[in-house]
Image (cartoon, rainbow, N blue to C red; front, side, top):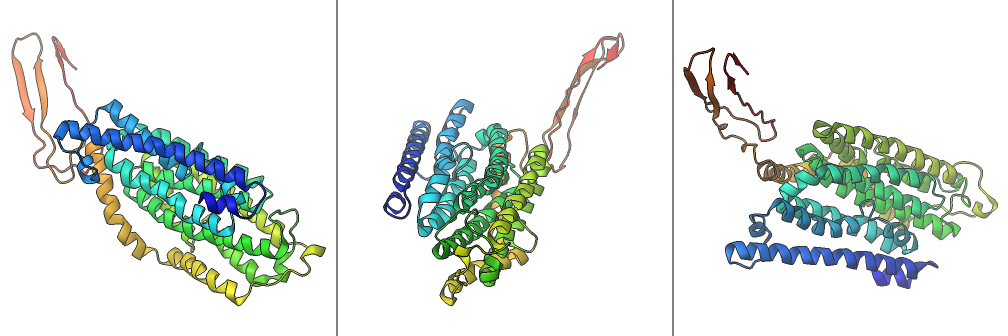
Length: 406
């Protein structure tokens, strides 16, 4: 990716490529140290040196060690995704890359970061995930709002989509750390959705640049009258990015927001504002570029060709298909997500019994009644009562005092 960014296209490509390389390399160093430290701790406890994730997941970690290792892993994932405030390399890299490099960066490589969070953070460090979930939720929500606001003031289409991508990654982060089945399923589905419609947006912007020689909304106007098919494709992809029902962006965002609302209500409420902001900047950009009177430079703007339509059509078909019929994808995602959420609940919340097992016995301490010395003791068992894994745990402690009850 360094060579793809540095060797082609625009004037600041060297700066963008170097910044991308240094950010990624520096963050990956933390990941390497974290992996080696986790393996060493596991070897010290068991006498076996292994890099098997399933074996390392059983390593006993102190609260401090778990948090430090979680931060080491997440540093790399946060830069790769990118997550606010580790995102500053991405607008430059997206802007200066050729279209193929931009599609790979936004559509594929960004998912390595969010995949790492779901696959490794939640599996290896469930206690640290529960402890630091509010922090990551806050960073995700800030990324949603910040990315949307900055995108709204951009005049460069590629930078606009780059900051839009930051906002959508924020939704994925919120879904991952809400720690509910619907939110996490939505986050995984949104990884797929984001890769599809963001890649389609960058491809369409590249087609516009090929015909006009500019990414700036100041130089573009009235393209709809010259290229109505291209405008129609842009409309569908743009609405998917906004999250309009019937298109793939809606399904993931709806699951994320509804699942997050169950456990972290105010984060979900604030994140919902990101949907409104996305509608503002994308509809405004569409209006600037496709509506109005064509400028003199756009009089010769050409319609999308059959060859170009051939590689855009599958992306648009996937956008519509997932939006209308997400069941096949969700049926593959949900079982694994449910197991992962159950793992986090059982290990991260030590007081929550596994689903389907009888609750623990609750003992009432002996209490002095009235002025007598009689002591009454009772053990009350909630016999065979099942408590859901995600249900609340109520601790009851009774204490007696002479002459009364507490």
